[in-house]
Length: 93
Image (cartoon, rainbow, N blue to C red; front, side, top):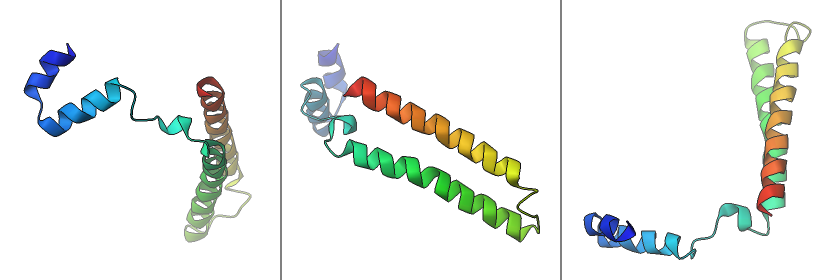
């Protein structure tokens, strides 16, 4: 099947396909710094979403008490994302 695909692709794509099939290209999950990168992502996601939500509340003249449920949703969503990343880190390590 790889041979038949190579007939239709250009030479650059053939080299890329061969590199992928020979596992010369590493997955981003095999990087030794992945724990630090995932930690940054896990911290930045709720921080950025909370800042955006806070800005939205201020622009539309809502109080923080009125926007409390939005912050709850952000924390729940961020927790789900953090658990997913932790699970993927554990499974691919």
